[in-house]
Amino acid sequence: MRRLALLAVLTVLTGCISATESGQAVYHLSEGVVDGPGRLAEGGTTVVKASNIGEFAHTLVVTDEEGAVLGATGVIPPGEEASLTVELGQGTYVFSCRIVTQDSEGNLLDHYELGMHRTVIVDA
Image (tube, rainbow, N blue to C red; front, top):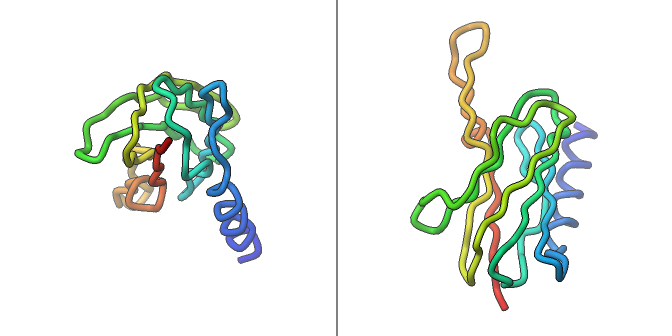
């Protein structure tokens, strides 16, 4: 419970952070969470860095409002990082993990459905 409360506070705090002027944004991936800026300054090309701080493999996929994939990392093992370069104009985007796995009982575990997505707004 304490861990969930801490994650909630961190999520709120990081939602107020914008990308640096160099066009970079950092997101941390862990079970059920894509943690990073909720707003980015428009700058065209953005380098998105993804750090997997979780216990399981994750990906970071950037989609536009229509769901078109603009960029995606490969599978990022726990403790590893990856980056991708995307063109982001003004608009709304979704940063998510799109891995689907199966537990020992045969149940599908869709990381997106388990909360691994974040709406990101890009404005001037």
